[in-house]
Length: 278
Image 1 (cartoon, rainbow, N blue to C red):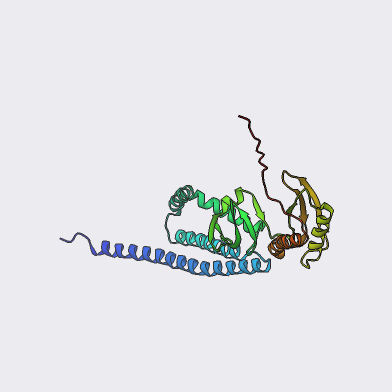
Image 2: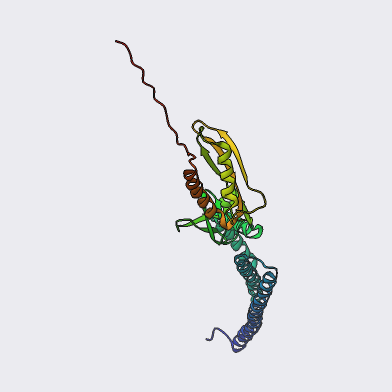
């Protein structure tokens, strides 16, 4: 005895065909939404990149924001396609939100570095090639990344500093301005001619072509120290000439003072011996 009559089988086939037709159409529409949406996301992200390029946004931030825009749009398109295909996206979004929260808590330090990186790039406290001191480290800025900044030290070491540590501390940019003041302290003996030494110091710095006439250089008595009379010598130079002038003036002052018989004292003590009668 047959379990199903011909009419029952025919009815089941018709129902299955109807369901396949309905869901198959939805799946085709969902695929269309996905592929068209992906093209639109790609076009919009490329447009955003072009606008940021025109606005001269930093290269690192431009590439990162373009990717963020693209994947955010692609995520929205994917959710729309899944909904059209008949899936329950409410539960999917709830699971996705919980997973996002868990990932966010696990990567809170990385997210802090990311936020700091965006701020550093937008506010432009420094740029590639600047000599800076950040988070206790000094060096030339090699790369400002989203999560960290790479410095190259004077002895060619690579130092990677987290961006959150940079933004949380003091930032010193030595090459931000076109000019800098060289601060030198030169000492002479108490028995030397003070006015002659002052005149020689002024002559040495004014004859150096790298020293700027404005602001005018300063030579003045700084203090009467224990073993010397100290002068402060403050010429202004281009930032690129700072260290050459610093080293050059120090050497030249020593040579000229030796020629002119002006001593550069060093700490010393006088020991007095007294005879003791027995």
